[in-house]
Image (tube, rainbow, N blue to C red; front, side, top):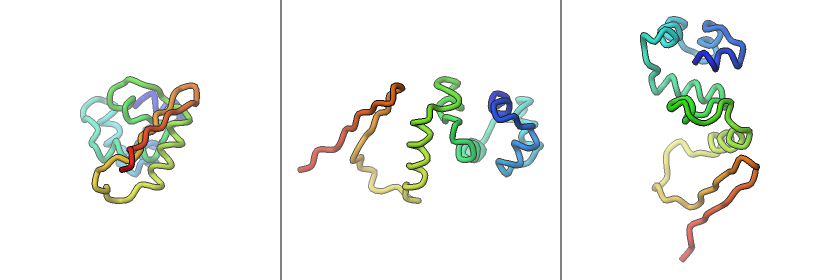
Length: 109
C-alpha cells in the first residue's frame, strides 16, 4: 500500500479520506497489524482504477495498470448490471500489451 500512497503523493490521512475509511484503519494496515478486508480492497480499486486487483492481491502484474485495462475496466463497471445474468459467457476479449486484441465469441446455433 505504501507504493500506492507514494504514486499518488498521498498521506495516510488523505488516502483514508479518499476511500471513505477511518485513518486508524489505514494505520493498522500500514503497520501490518490488520489485513485488508474485501470491502477495503473493493473501495481501493473502485477509487483508483490504475490499481490492478491481481497486482494488489498477488504482487504480480503491473502498477499502475496498463491504460487499455483501465479503459476496459471503466467500461465494464459502467455497463455491468447490478446482478449477474445466467452466467453464460457470450464473448471473451484478450488485450495484449502491444494494444492488439483477440475476440472469441460463442458460436450461435
